[in-house]
Image 1 (cartoon, rainbow, N blue to C red):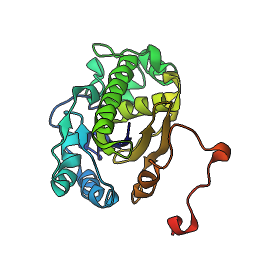
Image 2 (cartoon, helix red, strand yellow):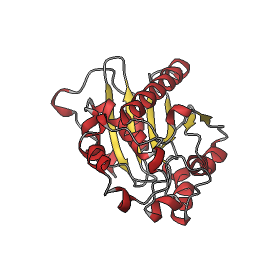
Image 3 (cartoon, one colour):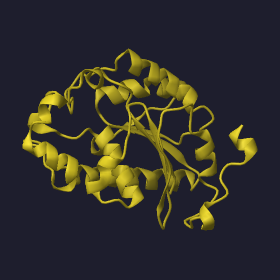
Length: 233
């Protein structure tokens, strides 16, 4: 089993406009998002990637293009990591959707939420977790426990994966924040996942990834020693 870096796609035109893009085709990155995509190459410098897996949507492909070109890696496309099918809500403004009765269900009890004409969030979590664990097993079998790989998907999809890794009920996943262009890190073991970072929008994650293979399935008693002074400089 290995370590996965969960990347939410960079900021898109829809993110900037307050519209729920969902699976709308041809949603491009905006200028900020294109900058985030270029910056990703530096943020992951020093991290050896066993592979890259992504959602089939254009904004994920555009986010990964500079990194994939720099690394010479052809990303694997997995429909299990696609954006939520928001059905009839797709393309509508978030301000307008807040007036819908189902909005409160999405906020307070997402496990019971099913989007009109679309899919339920419990189904989203099931397909996303199945996908991430399947790919992690494959990369771990090929590269050992030190294997690190990158997954690029969407906000609610990544939040559902993190909720599973944290042992959180899906009804609590709205407490998690996953911004466009952010990196989260999970190391899977036979006994439990370890969530190493959430919603990182800073310089990089190489320090956390480098330490991720240092222990097995056991948690550090007392919380662990943390980074040394030298590591922090």
